[in-house]
Image 1 (tube, each protein chain N blue to C red):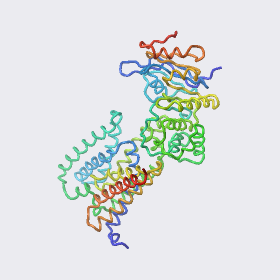
Image 2: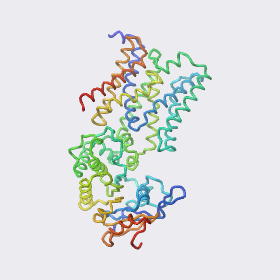
Image 3: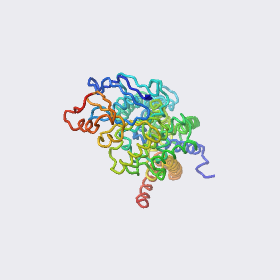
Image 4: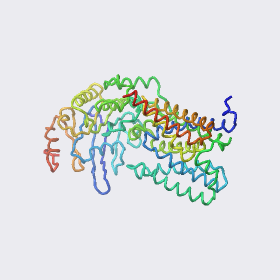
Length: 268
Length: 249
């Protein structure tokens, strides 16, 4: 067995990491195509407020993260209606509110410590069995939802008005989708950290869109790129003693650059 | 006897205090090819959207196939091709086949997947518009005229009985426009489809449609295309700076 897999914390890191790599692009592809790339950052900051609330109230911080990011997700979706021509404005408003709340709660909980750093930058050593269980349950809900509602989410992303006219319950599904996004953030933050969560949602999809030949192909390639980023990132970080979250993100950026180079050289 | 399949009664729509559409009524018969004309900003597009419930009307009722629109469920019987149909995100990574199949929702249902029967429907719709060879191409890589055909196929795939189109000939070249009207004639005459088309293409519409609805100053007036000199109607609707029509309403 590879040395890296002998450690139980690394086994947990790989289990959680691979699940995250599967889920992030599934959600990410719809986020990117709906031009809501910043939503990941916003919800992750809302989940930071939730983590701080958990630390303050002495309950499992990921529950706090889940509740706060779902509340923020629903807030964004509601505000999106008030600013229908400026979808990104609703994201900015919730982002500002989330950071404000997070900072206040952190100062109240006096929790600016190593634990918080683990959430901010990702800490695979800190992934507990409870985390893996939570990640697995949320992960299964997300995968099942995208599998079942694939064609509905596709239609909404391509043409929201057309989807509405075809009888798809667009408003309800939009709220459900943002809830799924919030869950994805919570699932991913243990591995890549709050500050880098949105990169796994967006970068593999950006790479895949450079060369994909269909929507299905975009999803498959995104998942492959995300899995490669997490695997290469975790191995490299283990052997070179680097921060895993940052390494995973840098690998995904390197893949993006390679894909762009490939496209320029061979697909002109 | 005329078979009214889409009926609008006393529809009113306003932005704030300014009325765009004021107590408009319109009956559309099975087999009609209706053109909706009027000057820019007269509310043609808004009228169609308000009829279909895509914007909220202040008052008025819409009856679709004999049912009040609030209780109408078979939205697959209606198709709508919006003005901005071809101004979607051109980088969207979807094939022609995927785009057309999206509109099969009514046939498949929530949470269910595409089967081989559905694929045949996609194939049939693409064949009608002559785009079968392009089904695996990315939608954004096609020309404006080709994209428009794909959007017509997307509308046709749900096997609608009535199709609404908003300025379908904007932004396509003359040749594509010609074949577009040939396709419309085929759908209307051979497939017995009811067509409603918002347009400012007054030259072509007078010879293609059987009824013309003019919207000016918040009011709507309907004419049979062959019972009046529709060229004059439409020319005057646009040509006169006062937007007055040269005929009696």
